[in-house]
Every structure is written in C-alpha cells, then in structure tokens.
Amino acid sequence: MKKLVLLIEDDTVLRENTAELLSLSNYEVITAANGQLGVEKALQRPPDIIICDIMMPVLDGYGVLEKLAQHVDTKHIPFVFLSAKTERKDVRKGMDLGADDYITKPFNEQELISAIESRLAKMALLKEQLNVVVEVEDNVKDELRTLNDLKNFFDDNGEVFSFKQGDLIYKEGFNSNYIYLITSGLVKCYKFDEQGKELTTALYKEDDLFGYTSFIQNIPYQESATAIKDVIVVGISKMQLKEVLDNNHKVTLALIQLLTDDLKGVKDQLLQMAYSSVNKKTASTILKFAKKLNQAPGDPIRISRSDLASVAGIATETLIRTISSFKKEGIIEIEGRNIRIVDLQKLEEIQ
Image (cartoon, rainbow, N blue to C red; front, side, top):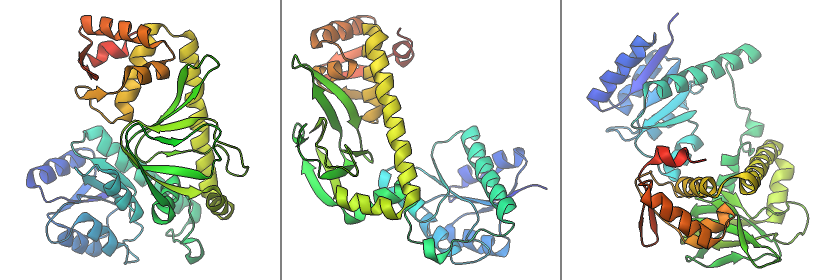
C-alpha cells in the first residue's frame, strides 16, 4: 500500500514538480497551496508524513505544526520543514516546535526521498515496538533529552557575554567557572609549547559549546580562548550544568557523544600534524576554516596567517611559502588577508 504524503507549498511550480517527483517514487501525494488548507486536508485524511514550507500566506509552516499538534489524529505524524530559511534560530524554532527534519531549498531528489524514508521507517519501528500511537508522558515533558534541548537551556538561562575580535575570553590556568554556547562569531582555542609556539587546539563556530574542561571538578582551563570574529556567547556555571546533568541522563549521554567526537577530532589533527606533508596540512587547514566560517568555496576567507599556521602545526613562514605556491598553481587567490578557493577539487586532492 502506498504511503500518503501531504505536501504544503505555496509556490505552484515547486509544489507541482515536487508532487510529481514523489508520485514517481511510488508515494500517493495530496497537496495544499497554503498552511490553512494543509491543516484542513490533514484533519480530513491524516497522511503518513507531512512536507511543509515555512513562509506561506494565510498560515505559515510554524502555525501548521502548532495546530496539528493539538489533534490526537495528527500530532504524531512525521513533519518535515522544506524552506529557504537557513539561519540557526529558524532551524531551532522548527525543531523546538516538534518538527522531525529540516530540508533547505534548493534540494535534490535523493535528499528529499531519504528524509521521507528515514522518518517513515522510524515511525514504523516505534509503532511496532509499542503497538500503540506514541504518546509523550506528562512527567517527562520538561526533561532535557538532546543537545538541542541543552542549548535551549543555555539560551534561556545563561549569562550573555560579548567579545570583540582579538579579545581574550579566558586564559589557560584561569578558574573554569563557565561553559559557553556561541550565538554568533568564531572562537579559537590554543596552547603554547615550551618554546612559546602557539598551537591551535580547536575552532568553534555559532551553535557550538566550548570551555568544558571538567563538569564536576574545579580544574582550571587547560587552554586559552580568543575571539577570531566579534563574538556573543551565553554561559552557565559548572554548578548549574552539573545539576542539569544529574537530573537529565539522556542529555548527559548526548554530551558524552559530543566529547567523544571532539576527542576523535583532536586525534585526527595530531595524526595530520605528525605525518602529513606541508602541502596537505595547509590545504586541509584552509578547508577547515572555510567550513567553520560557513563560507562557500568561492567566498573569501579572512583569517590571519599565524592562525592558519598554528592550526596546521607548521611555521608561519612555511605556510606563507606554501599558500604562495597554491596561488601560482591557480588553486587559490590571495588579496591582502583574504584567501579565496578557486579550484576546490584540486585543493581537496593535495597529498
């Protein structure tokens, strides 16, 4: 039996093309041109999954999700936002309201089909395990279960701090009172070796957590942190965080996974510094900064040569010679402090 998809999209061309794509993928599709019509159709015939735009006349996508959450027959239907809105606050708002996924425009066929298949499979497994419609119990309604929930806790309860580019956020050896969430900007963490050479240990961007030296012991910061761009962060004390973790075991597990991923990243960086060629270290570091700064390949990256060198683990003079050779080969362009990737594929292939 074909699964029923409700597609709510005000753009006529996109709605018709997407509906045709889903029909060719063996789904039954019903469509609605605005949020209010979408709610009516969902209540008349509850679909297996809903794909919904955000910015629409009459009723927007957030309103659709809120209205359907009030009805027993529709509140557990998998809900996927389809939108050109890509800012962190927009994504977080949708997920906070209960959306299952978020696909940004433009999207490709496989991305959409994969999102639908995974959400339908998840719902099928839940129904199979419970043999009932999944219900959220009142006694866990306020429980923090995911990193997204924890970040919302930071937003709602944290103290706001602002730092200008180049400002020191904390210094190695300082008392580690706070754990931070970045709401905007870019932060560099680093240490100095015995010869006074700086080594960048991590880069953190918007929506990243940092400053977690220890959650339970009064251990000072083991590295320094500086704002690479103007930064706004929210911080909560270790005492507050410990209380949260004591009472929310699921978010504790999510945080452990974050620390595991961070540790793997540090190991990979150490291996690269130990065994990679200078060219590969430099290429990899440029790509890392582009990703952290959320820059498209053709957009300029404004970063100091010393910061690039410290992340790559090479001398600044060596890095300057290397990027000059990349420029001669037509891989990058250099304009003052700005670096622009010209040939992304060739940069990724450097060994």
